[in-house]
Amino acid sequence: MSLVFDWSALRALTMDEGTGGTLRQHPEDFRVEELPAYPLSGEGDHLFIQVEKRGHTTAHVLRELGTQLGVKDRDIGVAGLKDRHAVTTQWLSLPARYEARLGQFALSGVEVVQVTRHTNKLGLGHLRGNRFVVRVRGAPGQAEQAARLLAQLQLGGVPNYFGPQRFGLGGLNAEEGLRVVRGESRVRDPRVRRFLTTALQSVVFNAFVSLRLEHGVFDALLRGDMAKKHDTGGVFQVEDAATESPRAARGEVSATGTLFGKKVRPLSAEAGELEQQALAALGLSPEMFHSRKGDRRLTRVFVEDASVQPQPDGYTLAFTLPRGSFATSVLREIMKTQVDTPDTEAAEIEASDPGDTEREEGVSA
Image 1 (cartoon, rainbow, N blue to C red):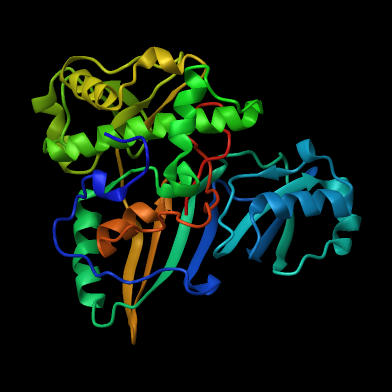
Image 2: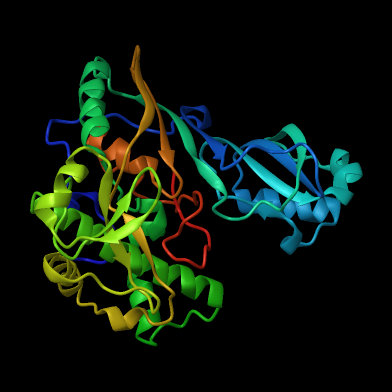
């Protein structure tokens, strides 16, 4: 199995023919709204700013905000990074003492939607999820098929693959990540090295999810799985798969995959065998990831508030996903195309969980 990202190497859940179509012909075709993790109190020592942006990465907006207002990087809070090639709405925070300077901030393509206060700084990962409204063009008469495929995803969940944005231009980040863990990379920036290693973690996770689909245990559990409850977030080890799998079939719990690192134990028993198969196919071992803390990630997530609206040249798809999940995983199941696979420019990042407890930026859209 290759380390280069390729949708065709990852098994889909929905087996029906996709709708085809194209994305992002205009920024307005891809809208993302960040959903806060908690209500804002309206008072406190931190200024919360909701911005709508187009044509800018979140990182660029943060740099401009800091430069124009004189705010240090460490004092600006953000829950997640959002794509340049979309219209995105998200919250930023900075110390309330800069409120008088906020009127100085001006950046074409960026609008301050609302301003309020809260008691604490906004932290990476402090969001409930993201709301997506996506226009699919070039697929006339395909709205009904999109609705049928969406219904399957609502019933069985979505494979929680890391999307192509995680893997950089040409999907090559994981290959460089392998050189990092082998001590062969010429990259010296610690932040970039961490991100490249994260891409390598993500390749293993994707392979594990694909194997679960291949073996028919995507919506079931295996002995040795570490399962997670969708309502409370509690994690437990599966000792009796026959007893626990009905809960998975009902969507109450799902298996997690290992994002390897020094703080996370590999899976055991039958689940561990599948995990070792994923590692072996890539020529990797858990010991290679000793520089990372590691984490666990759900192998599936569920779409909420989903709908399909017919359009003359295709359809508009709207849905909500929990933080850290990629809209491209939903779109790939419905369109059956190489959704957002980068060929000329690496798309940027999404929200929250890059796949490690260190909470650096993760990719999505």
